[in-house]
Length: 484
Image (cartoon, rainbow, N blue to C red; front, side, top):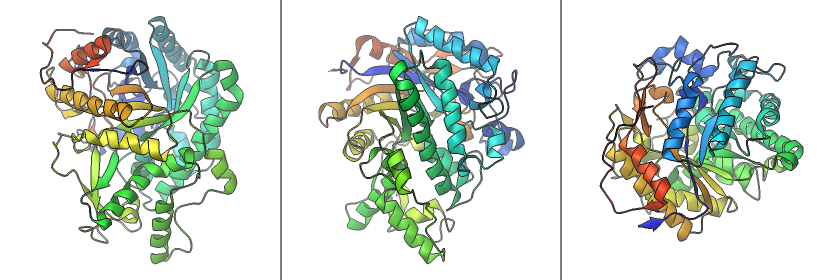
């Protein structure tokens, strides 16, 4: 039995596009995922879309009842950029969008649930994408304007802001590959243009908060970075180098400019992209440089480290075949193969159960990012298909929390929030509605999107109530019917 640290807050998370539905209600305009799902349903594994999703735009009060049932201390959710700013710009604020988020925030606070708000969780207005989106340097101004609108509207009550969620995932998968919207696939160039602009857009939003709102609103502002650990397949010097390179490409590309004392992109990434670019005949590195002024502008622009984590990968160059990845590309620049070794596989590869990886990732953040306060803003387990009995999800949470406590107690990591992903089943990006991460099952065939507590919801409710983790226990709670 392990008691949770007194200051560790427990919550759950969702994202606007994944749960809200109401994709064209009132004056909301399309964003890049609306466009992709409608124009090319074949890009989603089950060919579904999020036009309705969980209908949380309509049923958000039921969501709050679920939060109250769990007893969470905070709820992390995101605001849809085109729902609040239909033109994408700050010239027009949607009254319908404002009322929705205003009511949600007020009802959370009325129930003693802290709102933790993500400003951008991948739903870029389509008209801004038509101008280049995150590859256009003007996105720094557009995003800063958007963030300022939110601070003005809600900052009197919202005290925890996350500027951007998982920049690598939408920057690399969206601009350097064809996995996520907007599927630009400008491999080797587009992802790095997006990366630099994302860092500077985040910094702009942080500076606006710091200089114009912090003194009166007394809140905090930071960024969330996917921090799945990257290790080495073996103890060989070559594999160790591959693992060190991998974590700098996967995490350091966005953490180093913001959290390191030096600033700018990580040296390992700079060297590899420059060398590859020269080999390929480019007159300069494909990785854009930060100016000295930009390096200083981005450094230190996060009051906490938002930490999303699902699994771990192990890297080697011994089996990597040059030319097996597009040239140029982010994957070729890294130039290594990965696997999950012989750990417990999940039905979704990116949730392969490797619990020690979260401890290693937390320690990496402590050692490489100036020991910041860490908000674990996502951690969870996905399955394919439904069912209310989910012992594998409970087992995942139990094992990962056990390692988080080791990181806190033995490694001195400053973890202050833990967030389970997700409150309920939702539209899981390119997996569609088929991938299930919810503590609550959602019946997507039901007009009212009935939500029912899984055994993992009962387990998490007990964890919150007792603040005690039985790390060796393998039993699961008796299933009780709780329908919302």
